[in-house]
Image 1 (cartoon, rainbow, N blue to C red):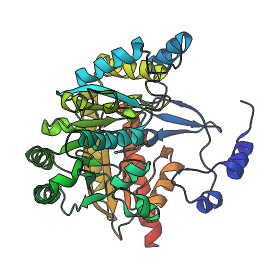
Image 2: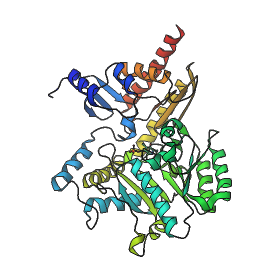
Image 3: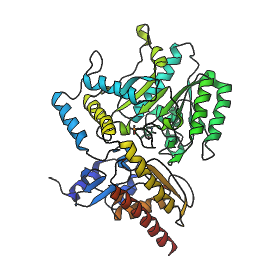
Length: 436
Ligand SMILES: *Cc1c(COP(=O)(O)O)cnc(C)c1O
């Protein structure tokens, strides 16, 4: 390795603008981790220390870092070709991947459109709905419905759907029209019931309803219910409005079954997948839809879906995404994760007994605790706990006063134990410091 740790940090501090990071704080607080290597559920700093990756690097490394089969698939494909345009051309990785995705998706989703990341998968879903209604006799359907505290990504369309106020505020004047249903109970059943009333009045203006099924990620790891999901599906059916399931975070077994929609045996009209899709190897995403939606774009040339990124259907990404699905089958990832999820849940029940913890929750391989005190994204105490965790060899980041983990689904049992006990010690350490 050529550069030493201090020089890397110096260059970073001079030139790199970090995502979702108040840069003055970044520049004034202690040095960042400098990753030299990552393997399985561990990150290795330049100085040789290792850290358990408690959130699988923003929820993507579902199979751990550098799974040897994924690296091998990447190398194999790179020797043949890396990327070609997906217009007037096709290739084995993308054709086989599309077929395999349809196979594992909730039944009824038959077509796959590829894009670059979660945000573009959502952007595409929005445009699919708008253009569908535009050319199929319901041009007044131009608004969307989503949930308060929702997060759907970074493009302007995704920002409009998002319900975390601090992320929307600066862009408010430029956002498409979206109604955010308040979530004022733990099961989301009020929001689900309100949806039916709203659609009763305004279905002729609503293009689609967008939700993170079962768990809202960025909004604070809020867990809903299968019942609410079924109610939302039923309301969309009653008023013939499209339901878009954003499975970018919840897909690929994060909440237990392959898809969060499976908790309720619900098939959305459109499903967006990213993150676990390539398990953190490359940015790539897919938007799946029903035959009905696809058929709305058939006919004369001007009915074609006007969408497509330069890197759509990237062959390297497709080869990796296929191997991800193969690993899920061969290594029985979901069954193994179910067992680990029970341990995770038990660990969080224990954490819930600590004095500063207001409540805990978990679903599959995501678990969260809320600290007592004021809510809100800009809170301090969660950060102190994460700093304590880092000193003890665990990398996690808070969402305001919510501290959560979303480890690799195949995290080794010993690392899972270590993660839980470090979290326990870190919460205790902050309790002790603040009681002094
Ligand atoms: C992360 C996320 C996105 C955005 O995905 P990117 O790949 O970061 O663009 C969209 N929806 C949900 C639910 C997410 O968690």
